Length: 213
Length: 213
Image (spheres, rainbow over the protein chains, first blue to last red):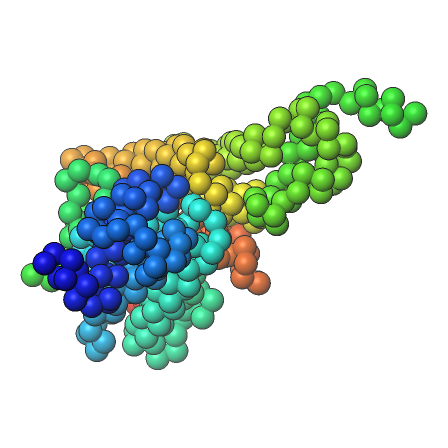
């Protein structure tokens, strides 16, 4: 009976179970130490089935990177509502980012740590996702700058630099928050919002940015 | 005569020449593609001498990471004079950081890209340097916060988070500046200083931080 049930489960569902297991094992053990036996066991399938569906350890890892990258990018996009004030859009985007990375620590480890520390072609996959997020943040800052000035004071190159700085800060902080006990996603988002929006100068003189109620 | 000169050159000098060549080749070709033949040729020595002095490609790469990490950390420390106002210390530190990474693009590529994308033990070497820089920035922000408030409003965890954000932003921006034509070290430092000190909110409303003359 069990075997019949197994066969009837659609391939797409089975694949997602394998990817769930793989993200967990890759994220926790690292790419090199992760074993296909352990992934198959956690997914509740045979190892040959994993190879049949996902071809190789490398292809399985790339499938993990793509799924996690898409999920993270979509979570950030879904969190931001265009038309709201710039600080609100940024706050919503940061909250979505930190909530997602906190809820999916293994996925974030795969993207930020594992995929970047095992060479090509993995690093290129993450670089593509990162470029998309930087472009998204660049547009957000550019739109905000245009809204603030009729003749924007911030040249295009400066806006691109600010977006790079913001994305780098978010990546660094998410990695830190996930390994630091007691730091919630909301706190991490508020720290970066204060840093990015109010600046250290204002923070140090006691002028903090206050999140919406 | 040439051979005699070669023999008389002290080992330490020869080693530095080998490391100079290795940083350039590792930085430009990447760890995997870098060839020991090419490194020896660029250093003007025989390949067996490179192996005699530095043992293996892996050990040579680790020696490169250590040398470049020490040089970068020392450059940032040397740029900052304690006792100056916090924004001046931060500006000096950022200028030293971006000037060093711009002057040593291959060294920065080794630290930021190559060492982190080829697994352990390389990633651990860079993580140690990064932890030292984060600790340095954390102390800087903590001292500034104490100077600004008699009863500091910024709890310790918040200061640590701000330091992580700042270091992540600097890393991201240095990588971007080194591949973006026309972005000088001073511009990159000013972009991050504005971002970090004044905050996006002030930037967007036209309040920029002005570097000292």
